[in-house]
Length: 244
Image (tube, rainbow, N blue to C red; front, side):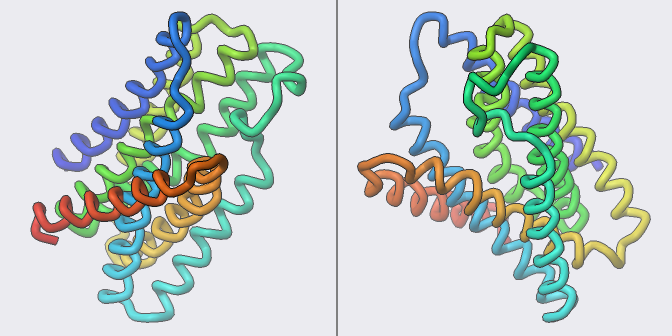
């Protein structure tokens, strides 16, 4: 349980760190190239981790459970994307007031942070090694995600300090999802293989729908490709370090 709490705290810290980046906008803008490279690197780390989760699920439960869990995880993220609003994909003209901004933020938090928190819970429920591998991958991705939560609200006129609070709140949601998910899986151990595949599907969806399109949106794309491969190698190194 200590490792799970520590891992969830790392993800919360990463989201908070990204959210505090909004305070820098008063003096300088976030570099687009650096931002895209960070997204590509995060995608590489997360893709490797999701593949490891799927492989672990398959090794324990076989083809059917792994495949069904993977499909369900992907479909859930697809449904959430279509149902709930997405702040960073909306233009400033579609934001009539700050209350609507808060509602849109709540939608974004629900889409991303609850499944990510649950993924951390699933990984730690399987093993400490897999737990830290998945935590590292999600933490890398949470830094730009923290920016994505806070930056649009600042563009819509909300005070920067309040934007940071909303960003940190998104990390708190992820932390809570990790704790509650772990407690649930501890009481229903037989569901862990399905949950691993489910989380892997959700993570792959985030990689291909959220991270990679933004990372490869503009040229040059070669640097983003190298950054993605570097992320995969970094995750591989982390897995080797923890003996996975």
